[in-house]
Image 1 (cartoon, one colour):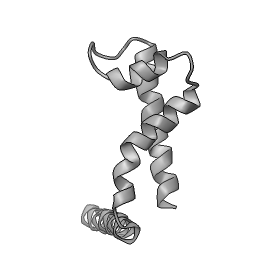
Image 2 (cartoon, rainbow, N blue to C red; image 1 turned 180 degrees about the vertical axis):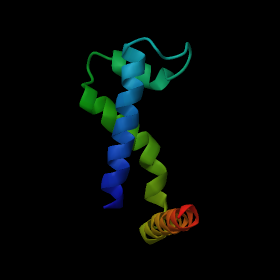
Image 3 (cartoon, rainbow, N blue to C red; image 1 turned 45 degrees about the horizontal axis):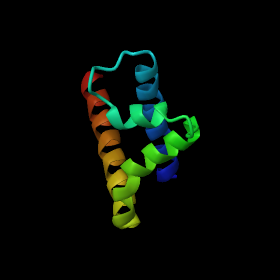
Length: 91
């Protein structure tokens, strides 16, 4: 489940950045790696997405998955806890 959420979020970031590059809204000199990939005629957009997501997820392969899952669980729990505290204080 965690990897699906990560992929969705990562894909949204790739899509948003690619749109900036295509619409020439990106600052000069920014996003050189993604710009280079998008300008390659031999790569489809799916190829570009896979390469980009693989680049940013490579570090996850060296991390113990139970540790990653636990960190996500704790961050979600803490967020939920603080939401409850906020709601009670506002009531």
